Image (cartoon, rainbow, N blue to C red):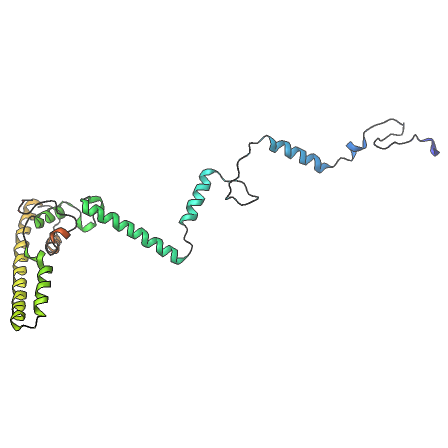
Length: 224
C-alpha cells in the first residue's frame, strides 16, 4: 500500500506504530446504553410492589393505608348537590332513630337537653305517678267532636256541656299539679335552677301515658 502504512482491519484500531490498541466497539459504544444498563441494575435490587388495579397507569402504586383513605374519601365525596342532600337526610334519619331508641330505653345519653338532669327526671316521675284528666284529652276531644256532628240537638247540647266540663277539669288539674310540684321541687332541690320545670310537667301531663317519651319508669300511685 502507498505510504508504507500497515493495513487496518475492521473491528480494530492501529496506532502509527502498527500495533492494535482498543476495539472499535468499545470506542464507539453508546453512552445511553451504559446508563440504561446502570438503571436496570439499580432497579433490579428493589422489591416489586403489586400494582393496584385502581391506580392510574404510569403512576406508582399507593400504599394500602393511602389507598384505603383515598377510597373512603371518594365514597364520602358527594357526586352532586342532590346526592349530598340525600346523604344528609339519611344521616339525620339515622340519628333520630338512635335518639328515639335511647328515649324508649331510658338511656340519658340520647336525651335532648330539655329532658336531662335530676330535676327533669323527678318531674317526669311525679307526673307519671299520678292520674290526670288532661292525658285523656285527645280521646275525649274525638268523642265530643263526633257528638257535635250528630243531627240531634240533644246530642249537640251534650257535646257542648262536655267541652265545658273537660276544660274546667283540666284547668283545675293544672293548678293542682303546679302548686304541689313547686312545693316538692323546693324541698327536694333547694339549690337547683327550677326554671321551666312546671311547664315541662304540664306538657307531659297532656300526653297519654303509653305515648310519653322518655318512657315512664314509675307506676301510678308510686311516690317518686
